Image 1 (cartoon, one colour):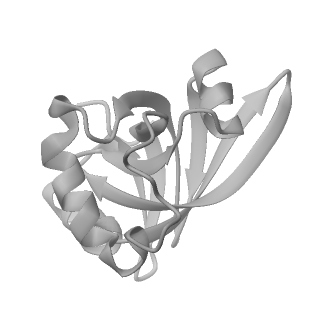
Image 2: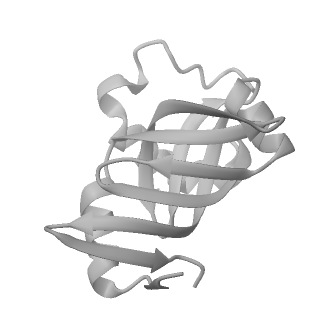
Image 3: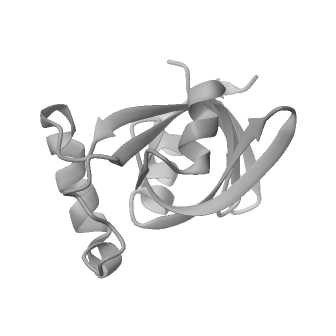
Length: 143
């Protein structure tokens, strides 16, 4: 277990991942690991992904919310949760940010916000390892 998220590591996380970032997300089903790359956005100890509720990843997370992630000299464990439809009132604030961050590709027809199964996945980080300019940071994100 590492140190709590410090001002320095929070700034590195925001700088590196507070934009459209490709992230590998691993799930487990019946003891077998699955991994895929998603577009993500980091904010306040969590990654956000626009996805589809009927996808394998969301089906697997519903059964076992433990996930592992990896991207740009960062690995972590956390908990995946379906926050519901992207147009749900409680998702307005974060979706406003995501539409801006993902603007380059978001409106290309791949994402259908009219479909009630288009959902928001939040991955709350528990602990992770971040490398930055030759320094290793073991971070405990759990407050």
